[in-house]
Length: 263
Ligand SMILES: [Zn+2]
Image (cartoon, rainbow, N blue to C red; front, top):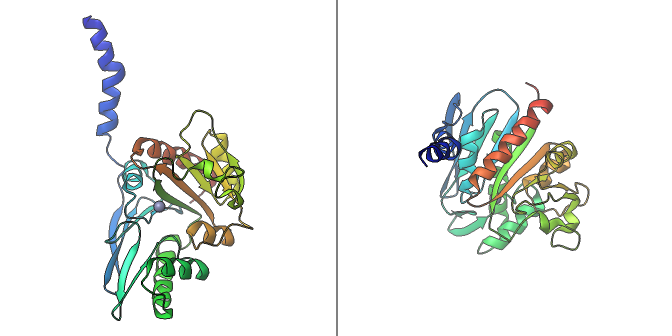
């Protein structure tokens, strides 16, 4: 009986303790950049790990599983986190009028107009100009000259998954190819705008899909922006609360990037 307990301690509890205590990778520097949009203070938190031209980017402030996972395992490149009051969408006042937008729908003119119309009291060209300036600021700071852009997102169970892109599903037209791995949670998947990353991630046994860069709906998202410009882009999409799974996905991608991206 005693022996069994000791083995249980070694086999189960010890690795758990080690995993819990493992310190996040050390960064070279941490910086906070402020941006004023109307009356709203937006912050870009920036962790600099090393000179690898890879950026990890969390832009939805209510998707904290992604940030926690990234802070634990990212050890190369730069990690960016967008912080602002208000959850997923950014809200601001400009000359007495109230506006809102989704920070992942502002990187093309069409997407920006649509998201402003959806989340504002009324659309105005001056709000569009202000948000366009903010989008350019984000692209300049975060994407800049990165060889690979990795977006970090979280979803809600059962609402959005790799299955949303299967033939006949809601977003089927936006995908060129879908790889569904057996015995996995479809909510945890890689959304790729780059064929090489899609092939490698699917081969590694992950749920993955390849965006149809030629015909994807222009919703102003960063995947559309990068797909059009041929910037290597992948989004690590995991269900809220799946921190350990998202950390495993990040680690797996980091290994693949080691062989693709060079300093
Ligand atoms: Zn998101």
